[in-house]
Length: 539
Image (cartoon, rainbow, N blue to C red; front, side):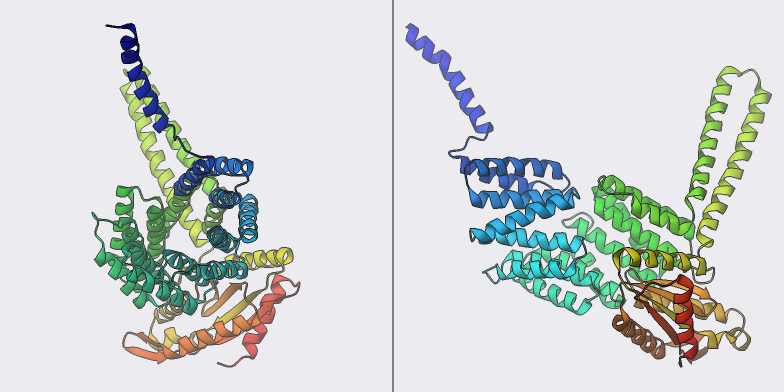
């Protein structure tokens, strides 16, 4: 064989191998092609990996700056902004998205302008700057030329969430209706299910439990535990559990909450597990089982820390503070550590003094005794943590807890100048109902009234029992005009509901007194002014 032939045959496999590797190394015909590929890959990177998304977007941005490719710069900046938002680096996210927005506007790049405006809306909604968020969402919607565009669904869904946070439930429902029309026209099953789930949440928050249940039931009937959309099914089941709890059907509530948890654990749905833990804690609170409610709330926030490692533990700290002081929680942990130490000592002793059976038996009996004492102390401490700041009849926060919440609101006003309002709701005219209707009727009436107010008042409004038959409500970020609407709503609700107890019934009427904090004042003066208005008011 000739030498040239041998050389060609030897070189051919190396050439083929090098061409295969060239394909694997993303060979592009131009720099712009490479930038577009990097941007596309960054946007498709899952939100659970924001660092990877950020790295890809940075590479695309640096290349596009070097090549003076402005549209690619706008795309890369917008993607960097979303990555920073997922990492909770808010300042950097705002800077990147604003640069993308301004650059897209300057070069008249509609796609980049839509993307940056949409995510600026999400960012401002996160910052609770609802006015700016709404403006950016509406600008993004106007940039969409096609009537049946999937991006309309995205915008309407975010607007619905924004209105839900502001308790503008009619506007939220209107946005959902517009989005549903498009998703059904496009036969987009996933968007339709997600929108129905959001509609269920909105109706639940607005107090329309029956309508919320109807939406959620449709989702559950249209999905299965083994098919597609199981994550949506799990969230719908969690919320359905809350609905049944408010309706007083606790067996069904627990069944839905537990099934949602099992489905989420089985399929590794992180957000689904959070929804299920939150639902179960909500249900057990309504069942007056505070030990289990505390357990699921604590599990909820610990699981949230695992899923969102960059977030602070302030939410967990707040929920712990609600059930008692940190010192008591630390005392419980200390008891558990002592038990574990005793276990280790007993196991070590059994290896070295196997012949001393009597002594081992003594240690074992001591261990059992200490375990029972520690378990009893743990149960009592957890119960005390709940009851120390909880009204025993209704399960609502008591006077001591409410005084702390009012002081926190005053402190916030001094820092941020955000008004808040106080509202007394009095049923004191029924304080003698025990003597007239029989023992237990008074406590039942208080629980009945508390459930009405819990359904009517949602979000950050806090209801407490100031004393028997007298409720004090703290309404954050509520001015005088908004307060009048709340008062009218509660009076109207009580006047329309019949209270029934062992065959006896009556129409409820309540008195109210309110005060809006808009200038520096003491906590006691606020409460006193609110009480004076109550004393001077008529039913």
